[in-house]
Image 1 (tube, rainbow, N blue to C red):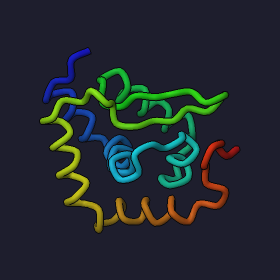
Image 2 (image 1 turned 90 degrees about the vertical axis):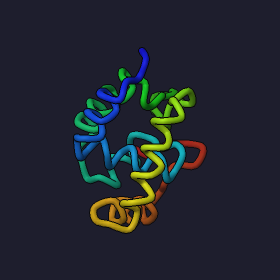
Image 3 (image 1 turned 180 degrees about the horizontal axis):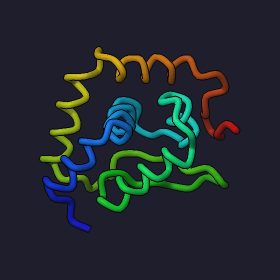
Length: 117
């Protein structure tokens, strides 16, 4: 699917998707369990929002056992990457984005080569 400005900004308009994208931009790759912990949102809701981002071509996922890790899609158009980078830079020190990052940083048993339960 080809990403359009409409689909990117529609995705960014949802707070859960925006918060997820900001964390992914800052961290590079995150397991679903890290997103659920950082955002304090149940796994089915996070997974539903990630599925929307994946369908739009904004993120890509990879399986490692029964865990799924997400990152910004490597073929994200430059214009879309610029929007996400600028947004992240603009909100990184503002609640709830700064809080999400702090909660993630304090997550016990954060995944390294394996994911948490």
